[in-house]
Length: 375
Image (cartoon, rainbow, N blue to C red; front, side, top):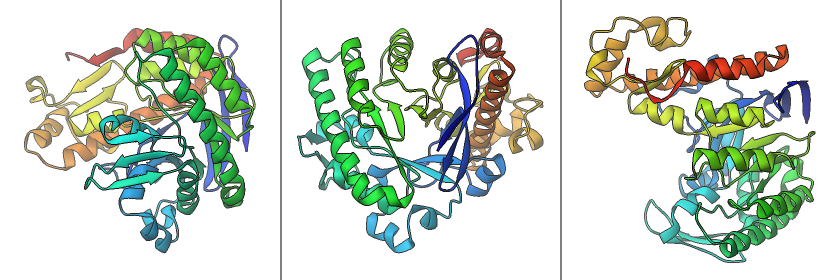
């Protein structure tokens, strides 16, 4: 299912390939987020042209709308959305975590109010696996308890214990209903920002011997230094022969840290979300195209970028689209940011194969300014 092609001599970075039901995926890889079965403002054919082989959809959102019966009637999520590539479906645990005032966690599962109509719902770990099996997910995530920074040790421990118990139940449900669908169940490590709990959670989840491992509870509001520390600390416990996934990261600097620590997959709404608001990636930093200084700039976002926005349009025109509220602006900016991420990950894989990852990381970060740049 997973093979490793090359390793970096100066770090834990590696290249590999995950063999999934809807085609192989080369790693390290960034997964665009298609929460509702679509990457916002991007057509499937554009993703196919880009070579995207794996996108993320969300079980919580799809369960609420359109509902599992509609997806079953269509023949699964791939048929319903006409997506030829692979789907990783998140369990919805993070969405429930973000709805703290409207949910209750019990040993049996979660009770929550829909953000759509306020209706009450209950989902168990078994329900979440069954939903993803019905979707036909290529990679599925179990229900877990995601916790914010700053909570007490006791609360973090309780969340860890619940996550472990739910993971065990999820594995049993997957063995009964899902393993013959071709979908792979990954485990999720929690433990908040306590080293002993991170280690304990890693040991608990690894003991289940699932096909892949995710690091949860990172990029949830902690400082950059905390992210770097706990990413590196937890990664030391991960097995070499399984794909590793850090959930919810989508900036170049965080991706480089993850790759350096041997992470193979990552996802985030950040690239497409900022694009819809008029901000685009460049190798020097993020350009906020709505600013007045771009009104007369007749060059593309990046001269050597092969995306449709850079091939055919100027910064001035893109700004014009955003200022006029034209939907083409978010569409072109979203495509550009996804092309940027794809090229960025291609360059990372090349650097690892050539044994130059450390110098690539330094060179990239020396020229890249996090946040919005001035020109």
